[in-house]
Amino acid sequence: MRLLDREQLIEILQAQPVFELIGRVADEQGVECYVVGGFVRDLFLERPSKDIDVVCVGSGIELAKGVAKSLGRGARVSVFKNFGTAQVKKGPVELEFVGARRESYSHDSRKPIVEDGTLEDDQQRRDFTINAMAICLNAARFGELVDPFDGVWDMQDRLIATPLDPDVTFSDDPLRMMRCIRFATQLNFEIEPETFEALERNRERIKIISGERIIDELQKIMSSDSPARGFELLFQCGLLELIFPELYALHGVETMNGRAHKDNFWHTLEVLTNVVKKGGDIWLRWAALLHDIGKPKSKRWDPQLGWTFHNHNYIGEKMVPQIFRRLKLPMDERMKYVQKLVSLHMRPIVIADEEVTDSAVRRLLFEAGDDIDNLMLLCEADITSKNEVRKQRFLDNFRLVREKLVDLEERDRIRNFQPPVSGEEIMERFHLQPCREVGVLKTAVKDAILDGVIPNEHEAALQFVIDKAHKMGLC
Ligand code: ATP
Ligand code: MG
Image 1 (cartoon, rainbow, N blue to C red):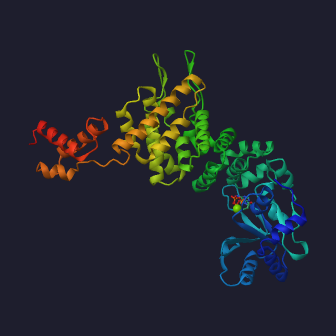
Image 2 (cartoon, rainbow, N blue to C red):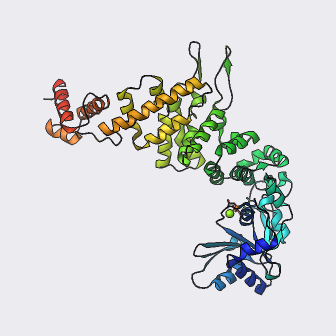
């Protein structure tokens, strides 16, 4: 972060003429007015900031209307009367206006009773000290920082802390608990110890928050540079168990006859971190987070084999849509993609563990299609073994799988496989109506190609169908 004195703040604000304009309109209306919250924080932290929040001691709606008028053509104002807020847009500039307010909460809702208040009242109702700083825009005090809770110090110390008693702040609006962990993750800040203890004490209050609000914060954690840290914090304060029980269930180690399995929660976070390091986007990160989600349900003790997790990928595949639906994640091709990767994540490992045959690689390519590269990336990220010899053997075999993938794709074009003999052609040639035999023949051709019995070409495939149809007594 950088320390900024008033001169420097004035210079920064003057670079965007809209701030002086807001101050002039506020002076005309006779109200105090400040830029506040995330925008101020991000000035000090040198982060880009999208939205500009303005608070005035008076009517935010009147100030917004006045500002829109001064901005002239192309400025549009939207008023949200129920909330006492207004938005002004002109080109890329987006301003939110609100009158300073005092809030009081009832126990069962995060919707407060709102009254007009002072600037200090308004700063107190904000979630964290670093989000409660204001800079005055009125001409006489332009650029003056108002920081009653020492947000600047907390930014220097890299701390997330609440302006008031954290039990009150979190209990009033439990969404702030998610925001607390989200900011700690995004900014790579520590959570001040008392604030963290209040997270633990108030965690049950998260139950009054809607799934949509929770997933918004989870997605921000997921998109950050170190999402694993966010999940670690959620785990440590007890929120994870409440909002994401399937992920929490991965935690723990059981021992039988002196044999323990690995802790799948910490393993999953390691895989997530590996995927982030390799540049994985948000949906590949979700696939990493969920790749072993079926393990708790599939865990068995086998006296010969030890701990097994047979079919955990298929159980996981079934759990993905349930989890997406509950967390209010999109139920579209993005869910299907995550589901596919969870389902297939063991395949390259199994291939690499045995002999890397053409046929196995062709089948993998057929099922993964265009997602093959991301699947391979996930599988490499999944190798977290501390046994260097074992790890190296897998990575070497993966290199072999990758080489074969390139080689076979060039030769057989399996990635976007289209059967070289269509169902229509089969029906026409053997005078068949749509029936089971057509399906049998099509599958037989596909298998023959994937097993390398015939090349992926029309003539060879047709000859194969004719031979097979003979054997089936179709001609
Ligand atoms: P970002 O835009 O990067 O998510 P931000 O701090 O700007 O971060 P917003 O949600 O845009 O967050 O909110 C703007 C400001 O409003 C915050 O800085 C904070 O002062 C206040 N705020 C937002 N949500 C809450 C809340 N749930 N409780 C208290 N104050 C809040
Ligand atoms: Mg914001």
